[in-house]
Amino acid sequence: MPLRSYANMEFDDEEKYDHVHATDGGVTGPSIPYFGAADDDYPCGLKFYVTADDLDRLGAADGEPGHTTHFCAEGTVTSVHKGLKGSRIEIEIEELGASEDDMIRLDQPGHICFTERELEKMGLDCDCDLGDGICLEGMARLESLSKSKHGMDEACLQITDLTFLGGDEDD
Image (cartoon, rainbow, N blue to C red; front, side, top):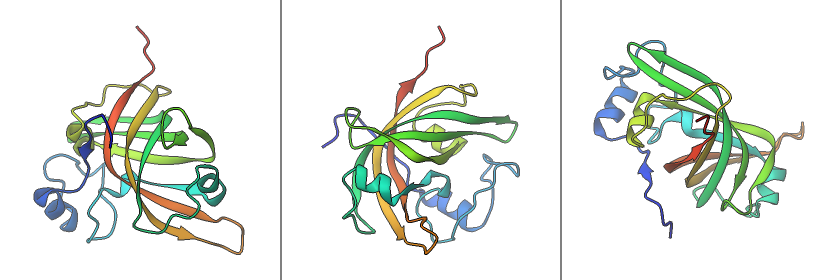
């Protein structure tokens, strides 16, 4: 069981309404759309992909869709947007593991996006710069496994619960 307190990233009723009806709820604004299926329970910006090889190296190759697991991740801020109607941070996940001690460098980085809603759930604001390092910990659910004749076998992970562990300090 995790020792840290995680923010549940699932949409609450108001967020679900805004998501289904494509409104901004007074937060996201037109420059930060909420994409995804109407029946999504979590923000689609918190889904990311890892290769089947990375899944194997993580010891999770036998995972099945619906399985939830603990994770730690390190990444780099690749985009920061601050606007009158909302903010967003995009992160490229470069390392992933079941704990901070067993992280691997991903063959292909994963990409996640925090809108102002997700940042507020974690008690954060959009106070970071391009290139800042970010450390995250939480729970992720295996959403799907895909195999392709082109060799791009991959797994889609949905972050369900999350906390921010810290990042680069410039001070």
